[in-house]
Each structure stands twice: as structure tokens, then as C-alpha cells.
Image (cartoon, rainbow, N blue to C red; front, side, top):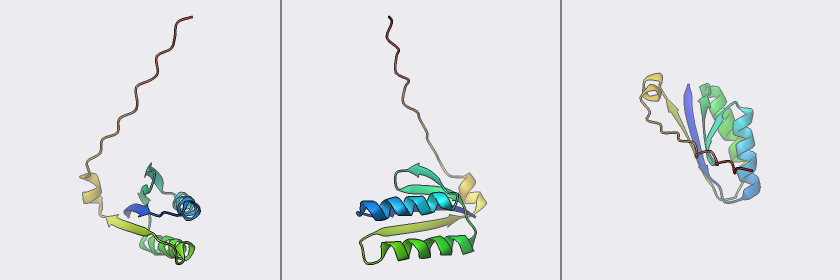
Length: 90
């Protein structure tokens, strides 16, 4: 199932570990605190439990959205790379 996981975690250590968890589950980073990818419902729940345990009593907001294939196909996306730096002539 297509998923979008976003989070706002003030603690640097916890935030970094949550990013590692997302990468371990095969999610792709699309923003500093946003990941997308394919996860079964079981893996979604497992990932959220790991995040909850790591977060402990620290502040944070984590949201995981599941999307059907139709909704995923209808998403709007704009990706624009920065212009390449011009090389200086010798």
C-alpha cells in the first residue's frame, strides 16, 4: 500500500533515528521530515510502534497516511532541480 509518513520532532536524536527507521523500511525521503513508499498494513503498524517507543515521552507529531493506488496515481507533484552552477573559464 502506498504510504506517506510525515513528522515534526524537535529532538535531533529522535528525529534522526525516526528517519533511519523509515529508510530501514524502504521508504524514500521526499522532504527533510517526509517519506513515501510501499508498506503493508502490518509494516505500517510495526514502524509506528518503533517510532512511538523511540519517541518515549518527548514531544513529537507523526502521521502516516495510506493511499489507494487511484489516489496515489492522482497526486500532483512538482520536482525542480536547482540550475547547474556555471563553470568559470580558465
